[in-house]
Each structure stands twice: as structure tokens, then as C-alpha cells.
Length: 495
Ligand code: FRU
Image 1 (tube, rainbow, N blue to C red):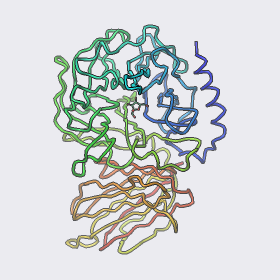
Image 2 (image 1 turned 30 degrees about the vertical axis):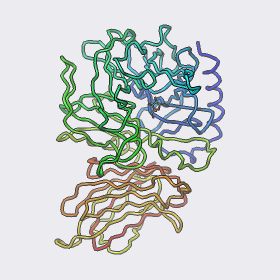
Image 3 (image 1 turned 45 degrees about the vertical axis):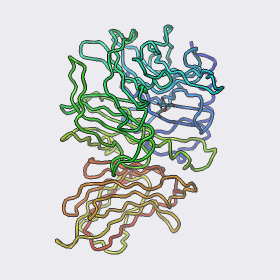
Image 4 (image 1 turned 45 degrees about the horizontal axis):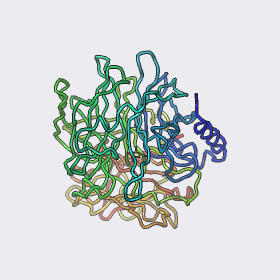
């Protein structure tokens, strides 16, 4: 039975969606049906389709009472909206259905696990949000909340762990048919820990151990964990709050973290080997993965950062928040690599290519422009032993606006800069990342989709993502070099 709250949300979103034209949205990045979107939730393959749910406030383009919005797709690029799946209408989630995940049960039903939030009056008159883990079971369209919710609450948290920071369950099924889930929690030291739970059937859950502890190394609370085997290693991804910067690897505020290591399934012990950021741009958070039917591990993130949400088109826009491109993951030498899903290649049209172009000063090339494009370029010094000082690409460009990528080989630093993208807010608009180059040779793949840029460096060694609200008329692209580079560039429109 759907509740009144959910029925109202479904009616509201259906009517509101009609007021947003296709051109007002990205072409192949998911945006909320209406209103506000944050984290991807329940990313799964179910009933012959990909399902992607999301943190959703249909009624406003600001964060608010969290529902789960819902969309389905066959290629993870073209999404079809289906009715909202969850509304904050239960005794254990009346103040929000926060992030979570999905698995398929042996009887074919779709099981969702999410964080239920209830605001509790504090002694000082303020409120604390008590967080528990809850279930809902459905058929891919309608979901019924489990009568025994919550299935994990403060009794299941180890000593010292906070009942106010206990969220974002990520479930999976083991080969023997039993289930595991990990949940983010704040430990007694004030920083994050990832708790591991087990269940014989997906409904009855038991605490196992702390799978990984932050110990105040990477920010504070760890949100939205995911954990999976890949290329002989195990990968733990999470989104830390309150990061301190560290070199070019981590920046202040809400960040992303990937720990790669080994996991002993017998002792359920995770041993970390390496750490890195997941995305080196401005807007990426709360990533979640799916295992595709053909065995690929694909990750999608919220292409936004809590610290930069004040960069918007206007205050009362019809939608706010979008997902990143889905990215195929791999691990090489204990580093995470990311590539746009190969399905994107099917959208390529109208190829334009220029090879061995010398760039010195500013260059504009025939046919290279657009705001919905896939552009690959390789640069190297025009003359051996004559290293250029800087190479730049400008895009979303007209007389007033541009966003740029600047690469200095001497420092080996790539910078994305959207200062001139039309923003009227004093938030972070630039980010620098250390990248690899071989004697000045660098490879970039730039994907633009109306309101964003995602830059894949050196075949997926690093990614930099940024949202962009520049008016769509600004679609120029130009290249510049201080010194001289030789460049190959191929561009496709994405249709
Ligand atoms: C991360 C997050 C999650 C939480 C959700 C609430 O962006 O803070 O930890 O479940 O957003 O909307």
C-alpha cells in the first residue's frame, strides 16, 4: 500500500516534470525528475534494466525531506523516470529516507536497504537525527517497507559509535547465498569507521566487526561506503566529510577516498595498501557501483559537492543536482582507473579530426566546438628537447565566458578553472591535480553535456569533474600554448 505522502510526491513529480523541457537538462546525465537530487542510491541491475534511485526532494530545488527518486535505463545514459520509490512516511524514517543500496532476492523481489532518520529533541533544545537501517521490498516500481523496521539500530553499533552518524548501508550477496552489508558510522574518536554486518536472508542482520577505521586520517565521518573485489584486489570507496588538504591528492571539505587492499573472506579482515582520491575535480561525491551483467564494475557519483552547492543557475530553478557519467573501473598497480562506460561510444556522431596541429599562441580549429561532445586530444612538445611552458584548452567559450584546462609540464600539474563560467558566487572554482606525463606528452578526454565537464586523463588514470552553468550559446573551443606543442584532436558530437 502506498502512503498518502508517497502518493502526493508521485502526483507532484509527474505534473512538475512536464514543465521542464528537454533542453533545460543535460542530454545523458541523470537529473532529478523535479526539485533536488543528491546521492545515487540502490544502483542495481533488476528485471532486465539498470535501476538508479537517488536522494530526492521533489518539492524544492534545495535539500529537504528525503525521498528516493527512481529512474531506469538500458545503457546507463538514457534514463526514464519512474515513480518515486520511497517517501519519509514511517515511524522510523519520518524525517528522511537517506542513502542506501539494493540487491535481488532469490524469489526475484528487489530488496532496498536505506537509512531511516528520526529527529530527536536534545537537552540543549536543538535536534539530533537518530539514524537506523531499514528495508523495503518491491517489484521494480512499488516498494513496501518491512514491518520489522528498523533492522539495524543503536543496539548493533559497537561501543562508542554514534547513533546520530550511522548511515548509508551498502549490501551485497556472497557466493554461499548469505548477505553482507557495510554502514558508515562515527567512532568514539570522532572520525569515521565502516561497520560490517551479515545476514542469512537479507532481513535478519548481525554485527560482525569494524571493517575499516579512519582514525582521523582522512577527514572525519565517512559517508556512502562501497566495497568490492576488482582485478585481484579489494576496493573500499567512501566520501569523507571535513577533509584537510594533503598535497595535490586531497582537498578541503567533502572529498572522495579510495582504499585499495586485500580482503580475507575467512577472517573478514581488510588490509589497506594504498589510498587516493576518486575524482580530482570540483564536483564529485557519494559514489556507488553496480556489477553489470557482463561483469563490469561501473561507478556513478553525485556530480556535485556539498561545499559548492551555492553555484547555481538561479535560486529557484526547476532542478538541481546531477549524476556523473557512469564509469568503468579497473585496478592497475593498486591504483583505480576510470573510463566512461563503453555505451557512450554508441552516441558518437559527426567525427572531426585534426592531426599534428602545431599550437603556439591561440588556435581555433574548424569543426571543433559544442557543449555535448566527446573530445580526445594528445599533446607533446613540437620539438624534442624544447619543452613547452603551458598548454591550455578553453571550452564553453564566447566573448564573456570560458572554462579552461591548463597543463604545466614542469610542475606536472593540470588545473581546471571555471571562474569565468558565469558563476556569481565566491566558492571554489579551480582545482589543481598532479598528473603524469611522458616527456611532455599528455592525453585528455573531455566530455561535455550542457551543464558539466568531465576530464579523463591518460586513459583513466585520473578524472576531474565540474558542473558548469554557462549559457549554452557559449560553445566555442580554443587551444593555446606558451611555447609550442603538437596536438592530435578528435571530436564527436554526442547524440
Ligand atoms: C551524503 C549524505 C549521506 C546521507 C544523504 C542524505 O551526501 O550526507 O550520508 O545518507 O546524503 O541526503
